[in-house]
Image 1 (cartoon, rainbow, N blue to C red):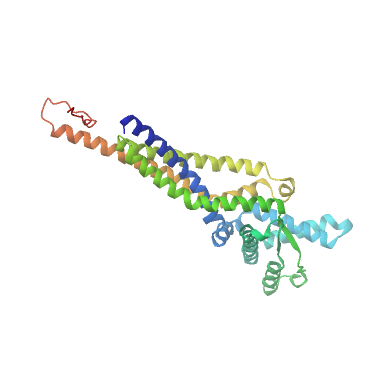
Image 2: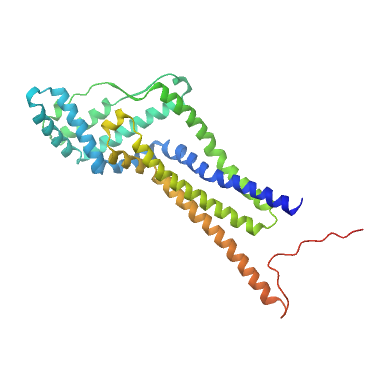
Length: 308
């Protein structure tokens, strides 16, 4: 195998490895991060203290109370009173418990629908009555006025329409396979590319630079994705969730992905720098050991074939 062919083959394998690294990171984040109920609830828990999220919840609760009361001419006064009361409620421990319980319930329901092939063609619905009952019980224990009058209705709330559920189910299965095989493929491609390279130290440095570049592009994709996600919210969602609150949710869910992307940048640059330093140190060491006046070629001599 000629050195030129080995270099070309090594470059192709290293390029595939560097492409598989960020793609595998995204797949792993989706399958082992977003799809894990405990990690999802832990990521969403701090949002219970976010002012933008609290304001959105308070406005939604206030509007719901007004719709239930149907106060007529006093609608505006009742709305302001209900929103003030809701804002006070969002600062209590009962709200945090209800927030975690609601997120856990919704996540479990969506995850079961994505993993169940028999749910094809069915929308994902969730009954939040148990969450409401839990919040009502906590408020009653705290002697909050009118807490006993909070209605607990068993109503199926649609989380995902049937069409969106079927589309996400296919994507979830693809990510599930990719999260396992892409990291293995990246390691195999990288090791093979370094092994067949004519200059292995240079191949190691190239693999490190490619990994760092992949991590930087992934971090950039997270930033761009935030802008597009918040800007392209459907009208129904945009009316219920404002931009700052949606951005806070996006940041909470992608925190692990951002951390992983910068770890890839740091790891890649460390590998590339270590490869360059070892090569530089080896060259200086050879110069010191060489006799005075003897030129030192930084590249090792190629083996020559003897003709018979």
